[in-house]
Image (tube, rainbow, N blue to C red; front, side, top):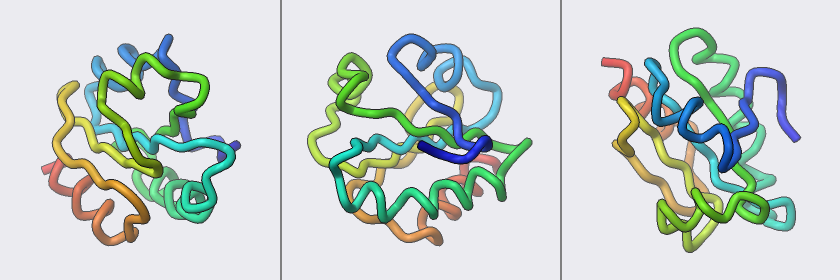
Length: 110
């Protein structure tokens, strides 16, 4: 699915990995059949490497993790949400460029 730097986030580990994280977390909501999601994946992996140790980057499969998908009203994918202190601070729906996600992560780190 992803590189070692990209966390696999699930309904079961969402609270521990995202809500209780002491670092900002970028979460990519995706599905295997979603072509734009596949196109966004290399960018998400790049960000994971670039922010390793400063922020977490993870992916959550919307097909198998319905609870979190519904909780955050994910109606279109890809959707990327940046969390800080357990709260969503920035949300991108659809194809998003690396610059916008980098800016959101940098703001969350400030």
